[in-house]
Structure formats: C-alpha cells, structure tokens
Amino acid sequence: MDTFLSLIGLLLNVFQLILLARVLLSWFPQVDRYNPIVRFIYEVTEPVLAPIRQFVGPMGAWTSARWSSSSSSSPSKPCCESSTLIGG
Image (cartoon, rainbow, N blue to C red):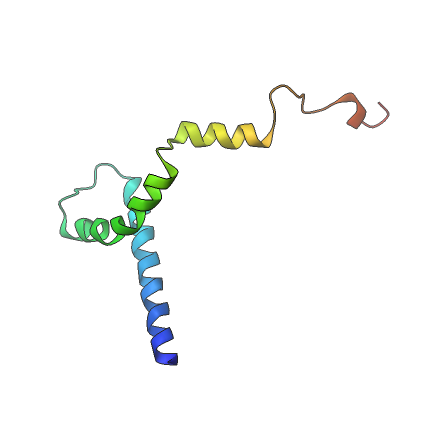
C-alpha cells in the first residue's frame, strides 16, 4: 500500500511539472505548437484544464486585474479618511 501511495505521489509531482511547463509555454506565443514535446504537454494537461476553463469562463488579464483592484479598495471611498489620521 505504501508503494502504491508513493507511486501516486510521484505521478502527481510529474503532472505538476508538466502543468508548470504549460503555464510557461503560454507566456511565449511564438513557441511551435506542432513540436512533439509541446503537443505532449498540451495533450496531457488539456483534459484537466478544459473543465476548469468552462467553469471559470473567459477571464483575460484586464478582467482579473480589475476584479482584484476593485475587491481591494472601493473607488467611492477615499484611501485615507480624516477619522483615521492621527490628531484628526
């Protein structure tokens, strides 16, 4: 049983490395998508990423940046109110 769990752990670690490679490849659009290694990376990770992509939906850099900035501060509230200043 311990050997089986070690094998599962090893497979998950290998998959994490392949997933990291896919993330890094996405930063370089000039990479040849027909390269056998790149195709292998996409074929292995796509069955996992496709359902996630359907659930999350399209989220570009602008959308996620706006979401994170709007959740951290509200444009209607000033960042420094007079009641929070010392002596104010």
